[in-house]
Length: 191
Image (cartoon, rainbow, N blue to C red; front, side, top):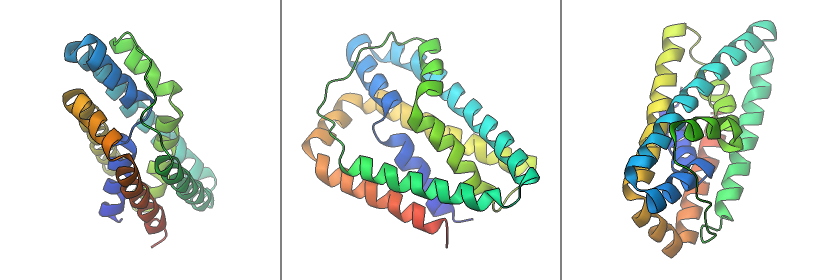
């Protein structure tokens, strides 16, 4: 397994602006860090749960249809190329919508967030299952990926205002770097 590609993919997808990160940023700015942390705890638990569901579903699919893993890797790579394109053309200057900042809103948001759902459905078959199939190995990877997600959420809580200003000031350069990182991760799935 290419750990560098896995971590790069996880960091880029979890740290880049998406619905959850934008809501965290908005919550910090409008309701303060305490409310943002409540939202973050809910989002993190749901993120980990989605990874567990993905691992179970993908393991079942690979057991029933062994050739499905190649299809999942193709879909995962294509999704990463799509994300790279979206990040490249992203406009972070648009205003955000204020949320309530509760644990439950953070939890439920993850199940409605296409970025998170697609990420959790692609990261396991693309990076983990080709190399690890034992429950302890998959569980360890799920915990690590969940912690990367939590670290991303915390980063948005702690540095939300600064990060927002930085992205707006250097939007094009930051987006190009993140997009190229995703392209690298997508290509490395096949190496």
